Structures are given as structure tokens and as C-alpha cells.
Image (cartoon, rainbow, N blue to C red):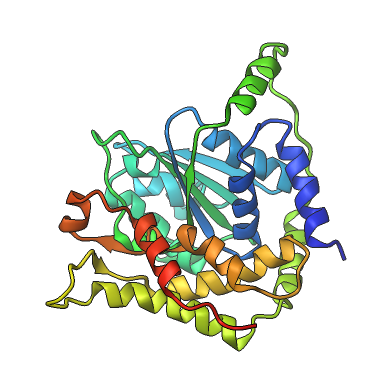
Length: 320
């Protein structure tokens, strides 16, 4: 059986043919694949969010579909609809692009709530309902969505119930000066996009999850995960002596996400157990979209990442 670092390296090498930099984001995407979770990527225009997910699908060797979310998109454009067949006089299901292994929901916040809700059943249950009939989605199945943080006109903020279904919310940042220079050199010398080849498969990914499930999480680390998540809920409790910065804390999905993604990250790095340091590293991506800031916090420009950092700093680390 292939080990974590070797599997990660071969996928990174293939993705690197098309994407320069974004090493941290690529690692988190691989963690999400192993942990069977969806990812929300947020970043400025032109940071290769779409290219990154598309390259990941090609390198992984799975069926990839992309939906460009627009204000006039309909739920049937995502999940499919019933089509009348004149020869038989019956309706038959026409499957939408959601029937893929890796679905890219590009600019997901540009579609109204009715369309966004069409993804909820698929993301949670791995199934969709068309014409009263339930259809299972292929395995593996992932939704990776992108959104622009600065454009607010013509957008619809994702409801908390939907953001909670994303394992991670990744902030895609600008490349370094060296990486941007490499981009200019590379794309200034070629006339066509690089061709990527599959370096893995959906079957291999499903098999690797069994390896991830063997990674040990000690009771002390489990207690540490619970302490971090429950500390965010304590910050949401109104107290007369302290200013309240959170309307609500992280849900139980945050505990499950930290637990499983911690095992996946440990396996990717060649370890067979989860450490508190790995949990601390994953905490921002797992919890930044699962806590709600109060108006006072927003007025003082307190970010969710700052709240998570305070929670991590204030929570005692379990002894070895």
C-alpha cells in the first residue's frame, strides 16, 4: 500500500504542471479528499482557484464537472430534471452535472438560495431527488466551491446551514514574488496549457481512506478537540462582565471535522498518530466559517481567524 507522503508527492507533481505555488491549499484539498469532506475556497479574482480544482480532478483521475453559478441558474440545472419521452409516453430522469466525482461550484454565492439549497442534500447525504425518486451519487463525491470576497453586488451570502457542511474554508492568497515571476516566465514561453495525466484514481482514494482510519487519535487529543470547539460556544454565551464577540459557536461538525482531518493530515505527512500541533494547524480552516461574529466584533474589525487564534492560545495543550 502506498504511503501518505508518496501519494501526496505524485499528485502535487502533476498539479504543479498547471499551478505554481498554493502548496498549503493543495495539501488541504488532499486532506479533504481523504477525510471525505467538501471545501469552500475564497480568494480574489485571478488566483487560480478554478484551475487548482480542475487540475486536482485531472490528477486524481476522476470525473470532473464544473457549474458556473449565475443569478438565473435553476435547481434543475444542477441536479437534473424529468424529461418526457414521446415514444413511451413516460417521464425519465435526466441527470445534471452534479452526477460527478468532483463538482466545482464556481462562484457559488452568485446563485440564489433555491439553487444553493439544491446542493444541501447532495453534500450531506450523497444523493439527490429528481421527480420524487432518490438517486445515489457516484463514489467518491466532493463539492469544491469558490467565491469572491469583495464583490457583493448580485451575490447571495451562503446560509450557515450550508457553510457548515463544508469541511474547510480555505483562504487563497496572492502568490509570492518568486512564484509570480515563475508564472510570467512559464506562460510567456508556452502557447498552450500543459497536459495533465491521472496520477491516482477514485478507487485508490477510497482504499486509502481505510489507511487514514487506522491513524490513532488518543483520548487526550480527542479531549483537546472538544475543548477547542466548546470554547467557541462559551464565547457566544452572554455574560455581563465580558463583551460578546460571537453570536454562535462551532457546531458538532467542527469536532468531527477536526478529528477526521487531523487523521488525514497525519497520514499525508507519514505519521500514524495525531498530535495537538496538527489540530492547531487545522483549527482556522475548520472553524472560521462555523462561528458567527456579533455586530460589535465586526465594528471593531475582529475576524473569525482572530477569534480562533485566541481560542487556540487560551486552551491548555494536553500533556504527552
